[in-house]
Image 1 (cartoon, rainbow, N blue to C red):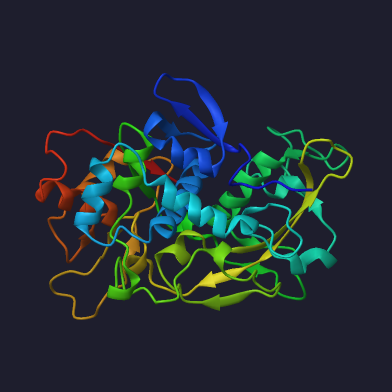
Image 2 (tube, rainbow, N blue to C red):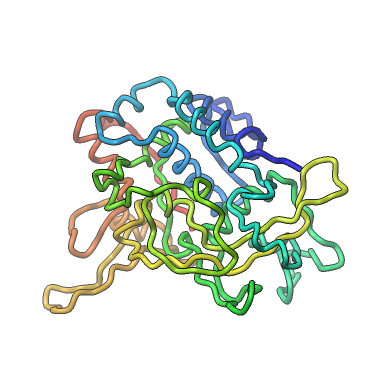
Length: 358
C-alpha cells in the first residue's frame, strides 16, 4: 500500500472563490497564489499543517537567506515551485505514509508492538478508559480513518499530543507534551496562502546563525533516518528540526481489506523530549519574563498560552508591541513582518490577520 503525501490529496484548502477541496504538497505549492487559506477539521490540525508547510518551503528553497531574497519571493506572482518540486522529487520516498523502511514521521521499529485503536491519533475521540459522553466510539466499533485523515492527525500528534502516560516500547511510559502544547501559536495570514507562508517565513540561513544559532546539520524529520523506538532527549538542530519535532514514536496500521488506503490502528509511544528553552528557538510564540527592576536573579521566560476563560485580546499587548524587551518578547514572525514594513517591501497600509491557535 502507498500513500505519497506529495501527490495524494490530503491537505484541506479553500480557493479565492470560496471552493473547498483537498490538494497534495506539490499542487499546494504550485497553486498557493490561487488559494485563500488552509483550514482543517480542528485548530491544532490547521496550526500543525502550517508548520509542516513552512518546513517544506524553507528546505525547498534553502532560504530565504535575507530580506532581499524574501522581497523577491514576495513580489513574484507565484512561489518558486520549480525548486520545491525538485526538492520533493529528491525526498519523494520519505513522504510515503506506508513505506516499510521510512514511513513519513513514523518509527518502523514499533512493528513488533500490537496496534491499538486509531482513536489515539484523534484528540477528541474516546479511547481506553476515556468516557463516551460526547464521542460514542467504543472498542467494539473501532475507528477507521482514511489515509488523508490519518496523515493530518499524525502531523498534529507530533506537535500537539498532550503527553502523560503512553504505551511503553519497553519500560518508559512517561512522555512530555508536544512542543505546540506549551504556547499559543501565532500565524500571520495574508490574502492568499502564498502570502501567508511568506509572512511566516523568517530569514533562514543556518550557516550564518539564522533564524537562530542553527546547526549546519539542521533538517526536517523526513530527511533524517527514522528514529529508534526508544525515547530520547536532545536539543533541536535548528528551526526545521523544531518545526517537525518527533515528539512521539508512531506507527500506523493500514487496513488490508479496503480498496482505498485507510488506517484502523496505531502504536503511539514516548518520543523525543525537547531540551531547549523555547524563547531562544520558537518563532511563532510570544514570551514574558516576570523579572522586575529590583530582581537580582535572572528569571526564566514563559511562553504565552491560551486560557479557556481569557480572550486573546487580553494578550494583545504581548503579541503586538515590542515596547519592553526586558519583559516581553513578541513572536519573531511579527518582528519579521515589521522589518519588511520598515524596509519598504510591505506597505504600512497592508492589512493582515493574526490567527492564534492552541
